[in-house]
Image 1: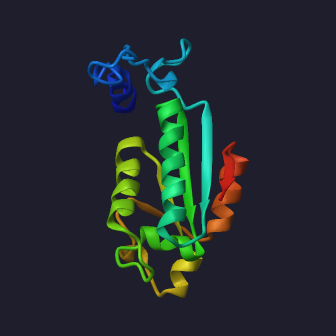
Image 2 (image 1 turned 120 degrees about the vertical axis):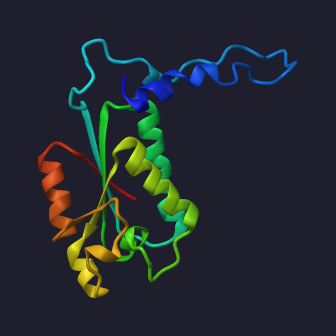
Length: 165
């Protein structure tokens, strides 16, 4: 059982009532994702693929994308591959020393999604050049591609659904 599927399967065990003493208290329902597809086996490739375009600055924008990623993972568990292509002002999320403000909470959430759920965060090499950044200037979980727009196109050609905010 993958770590993601194991964690999601244990969710019903955590707090099984709505409120202590509440007349509405009832057992929590397992999320849809906690139920594995009957014809999938550990190690099977995911049936769903999603790529996000991250090209806007600001914590609110970044939070929306990370929230959406979390919701998709919550629904599809390990049956989804997710990539985020960061370029233009969005690349600051992936820089060790961003030149625009990015909250530490959002940076930690991105790291957690990369490490725990294998979300791929891709940095645009062309954008990095405009800041005189090299791969050493990026967080360790960032993958660098020469052209972010080309990475978006190639992922779509591989069957990834495209999401832009």
